[in-house]
Image 1: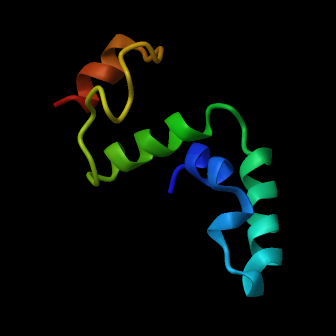
Image 2 (image 1 turned 30 degrees about the vertical axis):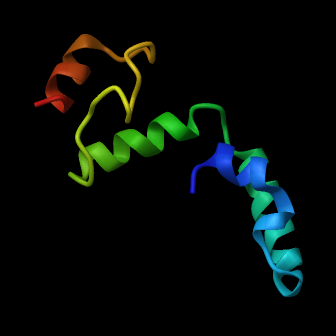
Length: 73
């Protein structure tokens, strides 16, 4: 689950028995730096889990041209 979905779902994503865990997870999501989503996607690309495309990292995200070329194969 991505940060946006986790924050949008809020505590309703956890059952009552795990509400404390959910609150901790939501606090951790809020504390992540703004670039966390892009860095995580690039990690997935670097490990071969996904290929770099518009759905993984939109073209509007600034990447050095050589990095984008190398990752897009």
